[in-house]
Length: 236
Image (spheres, rainbow, N blue to C red):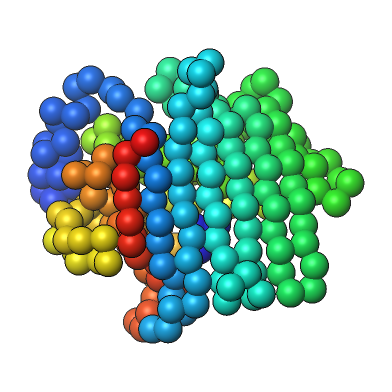
């Protein structure tokens, strides 16, 4: 769920529109966002994302979801991170995932060098930082993505840990669109994941809501496979 190329002229136009925000860097504001999830065209569950600023200046981000009332699948992710040179550094994270046949608990902590040490099922793995920068957990990645779109960037490359595996995601700006979702109608920036195969992934972020994720859609052979849409939002 969550917990998940136009011309140069188009890219420059969108980047120019964000210049005012990009001049003074500000991280994404604390928020609470609720979503409805779909498989094909049927509603199958719901999820939420939230960001809180802690008393010591660090941040806590959470991401939760339930499919089929939790009987099919549910997860609860927590990420604690700080900023260094305007980039997120994961300090620690946890994930509790429940599926029909059982559950999994995963924890991770910083290695002090931009990477993560992750423990799952009594096995420990090390995921170092690389040419992409810091290795993030899945929930912190979502916030970093918002930060980057907000700051006017046009190149998006992330390497993050999901469970006990790594994901390598690249996105590009795909245009602008006014989109209507259960939470309302918003002007958005549309981004597309750079990937191979018969699947296409799109994300819509709304500048009015501090570049919050409004909709995520996965197409398979040109038809909607899965999606999630914003149903409620507030700044904390």
